Length: 546
Image 1: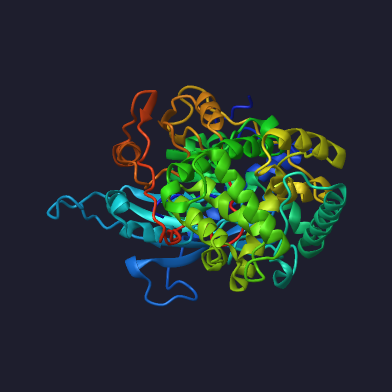
Image 2 (image 1 turned 90 degrees about the horizontal axis):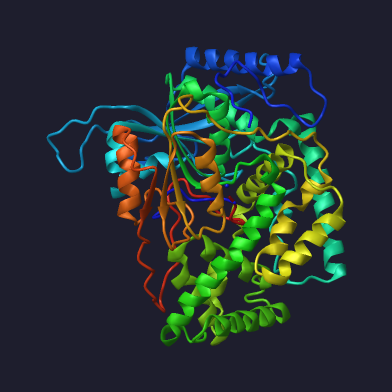
């Protein structure tokens, strides 16, 4: 699921980029594998020679922080580097050289820090603006901050699977235990969506996957003139970042994996989604317990069970009469799903639910209604999400498997299970060939030490993913925010986490092999709480993702 980097603001070891390549589930030959490797090297060499011609950012005026934009050219198919090309949109702010704690000290530039916020389907083009935030000033002094839109996203050859005018459907239902007729309708929608992706993208659809995202990252590295990559990936960004570390270990300088997708091939992606739905049930409990502790403010119940009853009462009322004609149970569930990602969303969500049950639907409509102006961006984001995950790995193609597994799970984890199914179900009917997930990892000494950040109760990327990545990447160190569940830790309110991030990026210093940080303070209740403001690099409208 989508992530936010800025809080205030998802076996086969390769020792060289030119030793082997991943295989697909369709028949492949050694010739194609070799061609993909050669194509990556060719594209990177061309990108280094061309560089990036940074200039004004399209569609913007007088951006603060000196952000500039350009493009990097990559092949659609790395086995055919002279074939169709894609242009990836790239943004950058130059290192400031200014020490925020010592105005007389000029900080040495250390190169470019490239960032991906997750998704799949999220753009990091706004990330360079992070350098204006206090939490990022020391890092921005030493690094050019670089964001980009991955292939298919935004201005980077946008992918689409349906008419954006028809994308926002609402108000919608969100039954925790759907009827057979409801399931049948959603299966039909999934089939239609998969068909739309195939018809709109044609033969290019098969080339939108995580392995190509990793190859694109190496071409971007070369275009920036960097011999070795310094990279920060959040959520899904940790997955293709791990692919990059496996494919191109000699091209790595420093890598930060923030909120980690479980990288085991057997978990990508069907079983990761099952684990995610189970984790969201625990996180939903956290949210309800916090609301219950502040019953005097919100009046939603003094226990987590009471809060759940209040939520169910609101959902039933919305099913009969949507708020403002726009917000039904589906939109309510989406709003509280966001609260599962971000602690600072809790006061806003609790206020909206409280006000609605007391007769004022306006805060809930403000929070949960979809903005038609964001439909094109949201539809593009979902198209890329679905294409990448469906292409990345085999999925069950029999609806009975999905129905069996998720019916069992929904008995104990009803909050998110079925909505997660409907998001990913097009993969059951996908018309493009599937990749076989690469068995990521690095032997001792093959990869520079890397930093892993994770919250113990993160639901979008459950904590066992961080433990697994640490096991697979020799020399990596895990920093855990204990008893916390926010998704995306870098640059957040936890000074302990940020201290380790700064020490690693600025000096290469890592803590002990496993380090714990105390949790961030809980949000303060406020009956007048306002919505959290999205930070640079954070996804916009639509369902949150890895």
